[in-house]
Image (cartoon, rainbow, N blue to C red; front, side):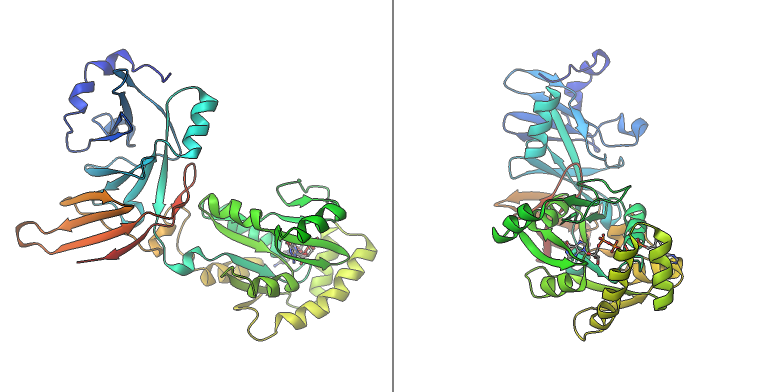
Length: 384
Ligand SMILES: Nc1nc2c(ncn2[C@@H]2O[C@H](COP(=O)(O)OP(=O)(O)O)[C@@H](O)[C@H]2O)c(=O)[nH]1
Ligand SMILES: Nc1ncnc2c1ncn2[C@@H]1O[C@H](COP(=O)(O)OP(=O)(O)O)[C@@H](O)[C@H]1O
């Protein structure tokens, strides 16, 4: 059972179905989802109401995900029987397309947990190829890989997700299982490697490390861009795998500085420090191997190196919220129409009173991620 519509809204409900300019009514599997309404001006976000035809019930569902900011005009079209594509007019292209999920696996699960009607928003991200590519970061122990990755994840929390590796090394004091690594027994990890569960694995400083296929998929499924912190052997394996990534190698300003950082971190025994420093020389040589890494960065001053990293990833001058500015997108004018058939959405923009007309075809057949994160995967082309 869903939540009851508050008394003060009941009287207005039929009026909502008359579809004023900032409201649409969308029918999926016997339920009508009314998106938008006069109250949006007060809440500043797009509202959702639900009308169940079979029971004649009017409901206010629980709305999960980050709500789109209210707009003066939108259109909407049901897609794939489980979500509604909402097109916000005259919004920036990175903010124009949203999905209201009404019967996706995430929503179904939440309905079970919450015992009521649930819908969930997910912003649609239409991107160029490079913007989706995972990022592989390599470099010797103590060079600052973890520090740079943490800064990136902190500044762009909804853009990047960390691929949590498996390792047989023991956890450090502040490391959490499942967050920094999946800490595992050697015999179990060897078995999983044999069973093909790993994209790559390597023996590093005397322990096994590996990226499971699931670790990368978990990030991609959440609609985020995957960051891998792996050694040079791992980078080489990924290079020859099907994963199309951007490879970045981080160098220290000097070997002495690397040693200083590693000791100052204070997480390794003297024996481990010696082993890591010995391995660092070989890693620094391999890092320069032609064709393996796309970019080399020297981590001398942290802020300078971080700025350079953001430049490589075309992130300088952007924020987590506006990141799609650099991505492709569709700017939907007030005058437009939308229809959907066979996993293709046709958006006709303009064309009134002699104005230029553009028709887009959006392919929604392979969607990645979704609520409560972003939805990636739709591709579009201009067909007229
Ligand atoms: N090949 C591979 N290397 C990994 C993986 N996870 C971590 N590493 C690398 O293993 C090395 C040791 O990592 P760690 O024990 O966390 O020490 P740190 O580099 O000093 O922070 C580093 O070079 C990591 O990049 C993985 O999944 N695969
Ligand atoms: N540019 C830098 N200048 C000085 N210290 C740094 C710099 N970058 C990182 N560090 C410090 O060096 C140590 C090692 O960094 P860390 O990110 O753990 O390296 P890695 O993940 O490559 O092993 C940490 O104590 C970190 O705070």
